[in-house]
Length: 66
Image 1 (tube, rainbow, N blue to C red):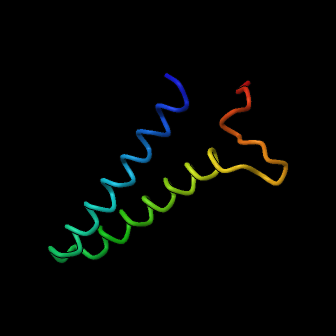
Image 2: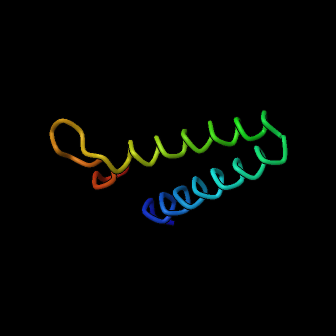
Image 3: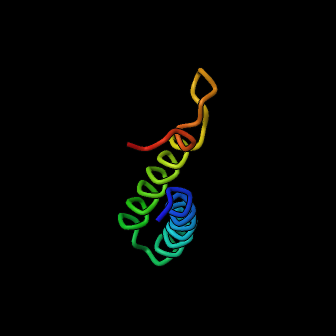
């Protein structure tokens, strides 16, 4: 399984988590909604770490994984 596929699934999971958090918030499960939002932020940060270039302009996703 390629890293690009994993990141794509992670982005989709982030979207679903945000949607689920909104639904949980409306149903009154505030703690569950907050935890889902925290997880969505962590997922989004992970995608950003792998796809955004660093100061040298290199993207970690393009580097060869050892």
